[in-house]
Image: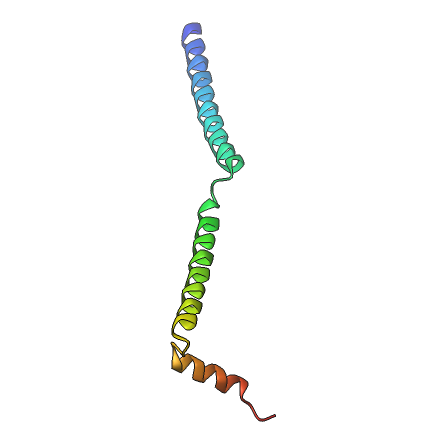
Length: 88
C-alpha cells in the first residue's frame, strides 16, 4: 500500500514537472519572439516599398514632362486647374 501511494505521488510530481516545463518553453519562445522585434518588420518593409514606388513614379512623370514639354495626362491637368480656378 505504501509503495502504491509513493508511486502515485511520483507520477503526479512528474506530470506537474512536465506541464510546467512545457509552459516554461512556450513562454520563453513567446518572450524571444517579442524581444527579437521582427514581428512588425513586414509593415515597415511594405511602407518603404510603397514610398519608393511613389517617388519613382513621380520622377518618371516629371521626366516625361521634361522630355516632351507638354501635358501627359490632360484630364488630370484639367481637373486640377478646375479646382484652383474658382471665382471668390
